[in-house]
Length: 170
Image (tube, rainbow, N blue to C red; front, side):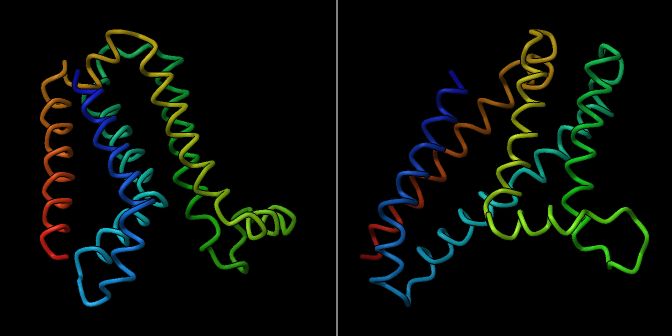
């Protein structure tokens, strides 16, 4: 049930972000709520995979350490670590011999601006799907439903509070 609540909160936020926020931010430029909400949504859509990847790695180290299968644990750690390191690689100066990506790869990334974020989100979704296959791993990751219930209900309340506060400003 809490996954459904979380889905409703994220779908509602996406619909509000597509249809309501751009109009409200343009009509009321002095209102910081709409511009801030739109900015946070934009940054989370681009960089939100980073805290998820770090959280999954921390969960792997501290919680899943005792009972993980060797191959699945190795794959998830390597894939997430590779994704995090690949996000930092373009910021390494070219004079440092650290195995820079080829110019062809960088040109492809520049010609498709959403591709790096989509690839990173794809890696995180792949790891979560790999972990969710096993029921014991899924229960351990989701906190047996208690933590997920609190988080999903909190996101839904935050969405409703921001929506009502936004309508109060107009």
